[in-house]
Length: 118
Image (cartoon, rainbow, N blue to C red; front, side):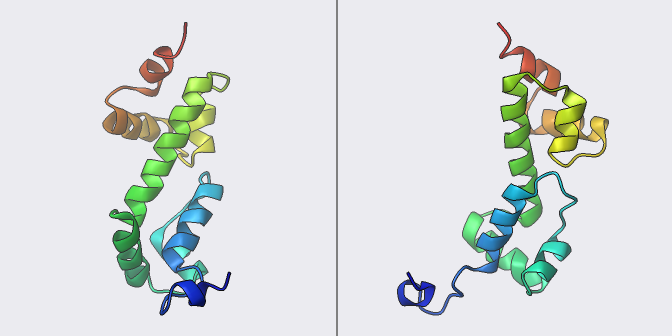
């Protein structure tokens, strides 16, 4: 289906949607608003506005949310170390990952993982 036919005035797939899809498939990469904006040929400010309008959060908040959700899923599976999970969701720094995880979920990755161990 031609995007223009159903969404007059919007690009076929807007930059916010493209950025969200890119984030999902490159979660372990070093992601920034400016690199994403450049990738989709918009200014960082424009991408931020599009993102806020579509997802009700900033690009940075969205990236963090995606990383936290993926980390939680991996912790539930329990077949990777917390360091491996930290790396695979794009945190090079284990302590920073632990700090962000605790802020997001209210418990450390280890405590979260232990909740799913029987």
